[in-house]
Every structure is written in structure tokens, then in C-alpha cells.
Image (tube, rainbow, N blue to C red; front, side, top):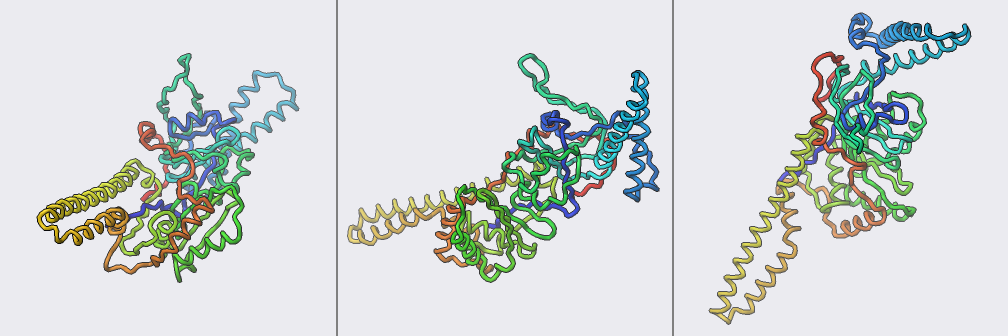
Length: 445
């Protein structure tokens, strides 16, 4: 039987965006419950942005400058209508106007990113209050202005239990998970104090990817995250044993395996290989967390685009595939057990009619019972064996004990960090408007 490992395939042009849910994360729950993000346009119409001449769209700088001009005109018109009702001195008016122009410039930059630069399949990270936790999601729609339905979660007084965001420019998002502050990459700790409400953090993609999914392909490399959960200091001798284990598992292919480590107890190790050597990753996975023996031939990796990988259908397929293997293994074991039981019954009958063969029968019965003790392990191996493939790793018995010691000393784990957000709980909120949306390049294949 072929063993297929589904791998998240992240295109190189994927971008990563940090988006605040307003001051003090006021609309965090709204974004989460209703599968979207939004930014404040100060009443500006999306249709006006569609009217920007195509001659300007070939230049980012020209487009951004046009955005600033449009928003400055719009925002100053609103500003003048408001200050006309106030009695302000010339100095006060000048100060207020300067503030408004600064806000308008920031707003135009923010809207430009939101409308023109965010693409379908880009990742978004939304922080909670005091950055105690972070939402990670995938953009699934173009920008739109239409109203959306909101999940009705009421408090004891019958009022909506969360604040609804009034911002008009929206994008649909499929949420993947929530990460706690401890699980969020240390290299992005500066984000907690950043003042911008929306900005590009793509330069930190390599730091974020292991927390989005533990196994993925990015920029030609297949990567695999291993959690290091010990709170104890890791000795040099333990590190040496770990490296020796990798050598035993990979043999002369060790030079094709690379790793990044952040193990300030706890932390993680990210192993990566160029995609031609992808098979080294399941080899390490099997050596640390499964059977030591692995065959190259019947092991396959299937790379899937971002939205497809996290979609409801693909999650269901992976679940059903795992359940199918378990069912087949159980059925195979039951078949063998039934055959053994039938054999034992026949031997009993023979023993009754021919006492002279008792010693031989006892030997056969003992052999059958010994075989039953290791039955499941043999079946598992049978499902991964192939006569026409060459074994990559040695089945040296010492590898298994070495792996057990390393896993124990480092408290290694292959879990997916964070709290996964089930797709099924979001499906009703992911209807994407078909009209009034800005065009964004679909990167999902």
C-alpha cells in the first residue's frame, strides 16, 4: 500500500499581512466568528477606486500617489464640513488640519495595501488584546463593500455579545488556527508594539511557516517542524546523540539535510531539504515518531495549494484516508486471527485422535501464539513494503532505542502548534460576494 503524505505547498509569491482588529482588538471576535477582515475607508467608495485610469495601474508609485490624492480630497471635504461647526482659532485649525492630513495619508496607504496588494491565498495574522493570542487565516475573496450576515451570539440580556465592525472595505478569510503568545515566533515579538494597523510582514515568512503547518514546501525546499518541549537545558552530549541519530537514519544523504534550531527550552527544530530529496523528511518522521524502517518507493508526497490544502474537502479526504488504512489493518489482523483460531481448533481435534503428535502440536500452538503477539507490527510493515524498492535506512535495532532516547530527552513532538479552527464551523460564513469586488489575482492552482 502506498503511504501518501499531504504537504502544504506555499507559492513563493505568497504575502503575509498583519491586520489589527481596531484599537484594543475591538473587532477580533467579529472577524473570527464571521470570517472576514475589514479596514476603515472613512466613507470613501470602492467604486471610485475602480475608476482609476488603467494607464496608472502599471506603476505602483503612480497608483499610490493617486490613492493619496483621492483620499486627501475626500477626507478634507469631510473635515471642512465638521470644523465649520466649531469655533477654532487659526492655529487650532492649522493643527487639526495637519492631523487630518496625516490620518488621510495613513488611511490611503492602508487602503492601497488592502485593495491593490493583498491577494487571494495570502496569509493574514490578527492580534488579540495585548497580543495574548493571534489568529492566522487565508484570504479567500477580493475586496468588497456589501453588508454581511453576522453570527447571532447573545448575552444574558439578549444583546449581541461582541462588537460588530462598521468598516466598509472587507475581505473574506478562512481561519486556520489561533496561536498563543508563547507559541508565536520570538522574532516577531516587535509586532506587539507596532503602531500600524495593516502592514506587510512577508520578510518573516520563514519564521511563520512552521507555525502555519508543520510540514510544507516553500521556495523549493520541503520543510518539517519538530517541537522541542523540554524545559531542561539540553547538554552537548544529547545534541551529539541527536546528530548521530540523523546520520544513522539518512546515511550518506545527511549532507542533503539542513536544519534551523531554536531550542531555548522549549522551542523547535526545522529540518529542510531541497525538493528532490523530499523523501528524507518522511524518513526522519518515521525514525523519530514511527517505524524505523521506511521504503522510498511506496512513500509519496502530494503537494497542495494553500486554499485547497485547508479546504473542507481535503481535510475530509485526509481523515477518511487515515480511517481507511486503520480499517484495512484491523480487517487484515482479524483475517489472520480467524485463520489462526481455525488452525488451533483443527490441531485440538488432531491431538484428541492422535496423542503421539502432541509434542509437535504444542510446538505449533506456541509458534502461533508468539506470532499473534507481534501481529499488528508485522501487518503495519507489510503495508509499507515493496519488493522492487531499495531500503533507504538500515533496520539496525539500535536506531529505535536511540530515537526513543532522543525523543524522551528533547521531549520531541510532531504536533501542529496552536488551536486549529475547524472548517465546518466557518462554512456558512464563507459565501463570497459576486459583485462589487476588486480584482485580485487568484494564486490557488
